[in-house]
Image 1 (cartoon, rainbow, N blue to C red):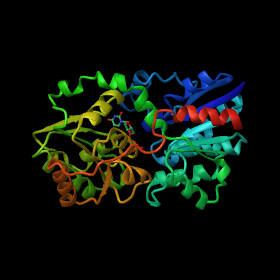
Image 2 (image 1 turned 120 degrees about the vertical axis):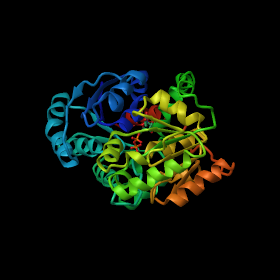
Image 3 (image 1 turned 30 degrees about the horizontal axis):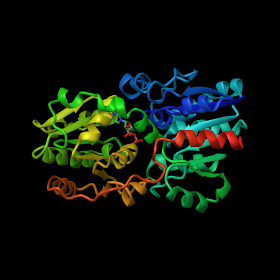
Length: 363
Ligand code: UDP
């Protein structure tokens, strides 16, 4: 029986692994364990996803609580050795691009275990993004490359990864969306906030490049304020963004009316809101993909995206951090103008099963 260890640490990681255990079980002959680093740990950023998405309780919990990213990485490197050495997995699967992804992959590789990177090969070509460095480093030390969109194949080949290690399987985040669609449809979050379908916008911001700097955060809040003059805005706020709004003294810039300002939402309510919205304004990685799948217009305030298929095929569009540009594009959507999109290849809810099939054949 092959031993599979899946590693998670943050909200987006959790959303990328929900269908894996089931797929390994269905294939038989696998033992499945879950390791959680503890990078995200509070209820709204962590526990709610275990509850709603029926994720197994972690078999190993590292309780990493560093104050900064280097402490987080250092602590993971230190604490992950024991579970790796005691469990002796046949493969460690790491999703995404967060510090936990890189740190667990690095420790596993150094200790001689095979590493499979889920969502491999994505590149923004913006080295200012900590996630870009995590992606590149993780890909340099992986053995299996599970790819969610075709551009990633070229990116990896350019970095010298052999073609035979690349597996275009589709998007495991979309597996979660497909698996939970019926439950998402039953949510009553619109009624709770007296929102009408197609008549509100959802906003999320959390990237350091946007929210760690007072001037950037001011532009974002002023844009939201102007948008809220035309259409209700729902803003589930990431803890990092909330902290910075308070620290920079920008709370007064939040719209006084037409704003639903909430804690981070659970997955089911969040996806229901996205699905029924007129458009989304964001800097999230995952939300660019979810909106493309749901065919909801998405305006992404970032200089680049590591998920170009959401632009070429999907409903995503990149915008500069400029209030006039942001408000103009929102206005375009309000006027009924936005491109149509198609669902990218293999975003069909079966990516986790493809991963399991490949591991069964090749491990
Ligand atoms: N999400 C959620 N509730 C929220 C905001 C986000 O459930 O209030 C989910 C959503 O599925 C999103 C995922 O969390 O795709 C990842 O979130 P985030 O934007 O923080 O991370 P990124 O994808 O940018 O790494």
